[in-house]
Image (tube, rainbow, N blue to C red):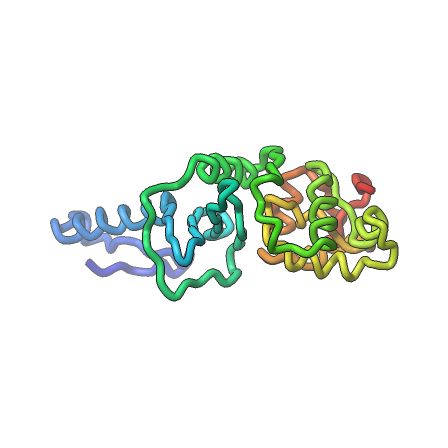
Amino acid sequence: MNFEQDGSSGCWKVPAAAHVLTSEAVESLVITIGIIQECFQEVRVLIDSGVCEVRIPSQFGKIFLWWVENPDGIRIRRVWLPGMASKRDSVRTPSGIPEPVDALITLIRRKLAGEEVLFNLSLLDWTICSDFQQRVLRAEHAIPHGCISTYGRIAAHIGSPRGGRAVGAMLAANPFPLLIPCHRAVRSTGELGGFQGGIPMKRALLEMEGVAFLSNGRVSLETIYY
């Protein structure tokens, strides 16, 4: 069945003469709806070289969560936000998602719905971070919901008063965005700075947490931390 474009609204509509759908059109529509539902509900689990991946649909796009199973239990290896590269040469599907990972997925969804969530740092695979990056990330994790800090203030807090740029670099390479809320770090001017998921996502996350923005697009520093 062909569709016509409305000249005034630009929307596509069924021609006036085509009030009855054929059986082929109905079947095609059902298949299309099924594909859309799968896209929103998809949580695929993949594994390669001991690293498992779950894909979590969100309003920002797909988020990829990687984990490994060490002798001391499940550890989160990486969180990939929409737009970040997450590729494998070969993958296979494991039998299921471990309970700690499943519980974490629930918390991530709650976080993306605007709820206040504090993630458990013991689940993270800290072996992939340097000592300095660990200090930065732990300080960032301590910034409360609804507050922001600056790269310079975080640097001073961890004992590196001139390390603002180094702090920014460590947050730009944060392996655990969302779990470590690096979106809560901004420039001293209130400008947002960078974010792995993009500036629109950073602003949206802050707005969901109740952080105020000025008319010039900068963050209000009324709720600054450290």
